[in-house]
Length: 127
Image (cartoon, rainbow, N blue to C red; front, top):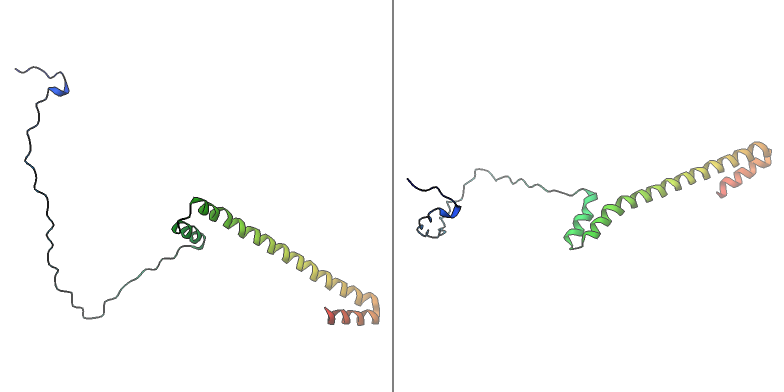
């Protein structure tokens, strides 16, 4: 009867292994090229990044740091929002100017009589 093992190191040493031979790559000759009855069809997928990511990918590919990516992510939509807001404001101002001019011409025609009509026509030709 053997004594119980007290420690992990009481195990006998493993038997030495035979060294393995290194694996040598031996290329095999390629087969003959396939003969096609028809011209082969090549399917080529062209992927395009969505517009909002293009600037970020260019910044990363150009070696720019994370600051350029953050600027593209943060200031891109901010710039679009600011330009849209300015365009809407200018459109409202233009609408107010057009309505005001139309109102002035209408009032001058109705109140001024024949002289008002002549003045409205003169104003219309100049404007």
